[in-house]
Image 1 (cartoon, rainbow, N blue to C red):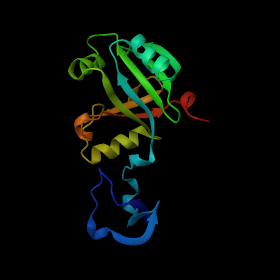
Image 2: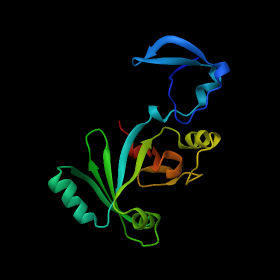
Image 3: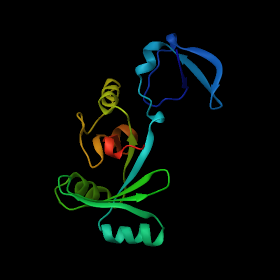
Image 4: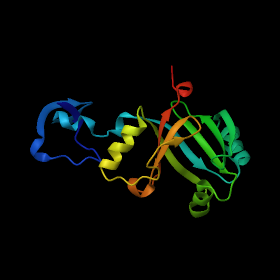
Length: 181
């Protein structure tokens, strides 16, 4: 059996198979799950790799985020395959990714035209993106990417914002070169 916190947004538990346990996990009541539940997705165990923010003008955004707010620029690059210019900023235990479209036909440009500047996505680093996508599909979660594709720092896939209450979620399996030591 596996310990898991009671509240899991994407999981539907078969109540006949659950047993209430008097133990706690980080001070919260827990339930005992049968071995079959081990393969259930728990993104709460993943960490936030970065938050993506879409902007019209990357230079102006860098002036604000670095010059006024004090973030440090880690990397700036042009990603013509994705139709964006990107800047990664150090945010302590995470990273901010500023995205500015360079191709008016890119998905990022369409997003910016529909929603304006602001939050674009939250990225969770996962150890096995194929398994994560399989688990999401099994739970009926709407995906933008059914198959992972190569991103800037590894394999990526996106969960549709309608599946996460208006927030687009990026799943990232980092390449070896971009994994922490």
